[in-house]
Image (tube, rainbow, N blue to C red; front, side, top):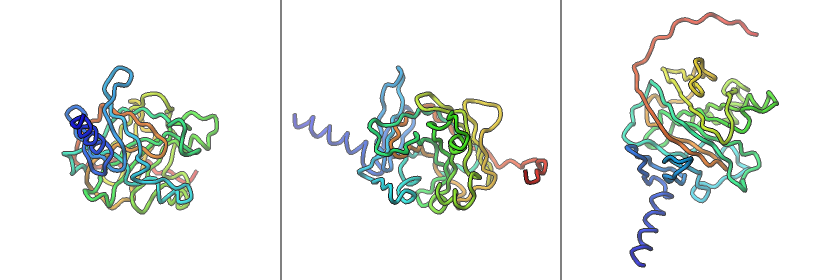
Length: 246
């Protein structure tokens, strides 16, 4: 009985403490203010991640200060991603009951994460509104932000809709997200479509290289599998056709 109690305590600490590790296949993830475990889902092993609200409380009255922050699972053994491709399959559910009425299934990727978590870039999804019959809501499906100075609310005030967009996604289904990072730009592709759904032509973060992370936010149950990272040299872009204001 004593051994069982000690094992259970160790297992709990491994999954819930800041900076603890979790093995998933050949990949190791370090957890920051999230809980994580490997579970069977739809017959296959996947990584289940949820935000740990005890470790990092959510405050609706301090929304921007308590979202888009250090709550993610970091892929270990890769700390120099600068340019290249990040691809992952992910599945978003909303907790029931939900601790936040505005929950939208927030799920996505962090990249160029500094080792001390002082800076990183992100593109994530709000799958709940991806197929809304309201175009305004659809236009908030994709979100870019740069930690720590350019979170979602700051960007909405600074440049409405420039760092958000639409994508054909939904809750409770597998989504393949691919991000192509090249210099100051990032393009996001959904479900192996030929053309990107979203582009950030000039990222705002100061971090030029770093680690990769799996992100969830308030009220999301996130399932992840098949994370692939390919590093590439910087590609020189062809000059695109100039587009005047429309």
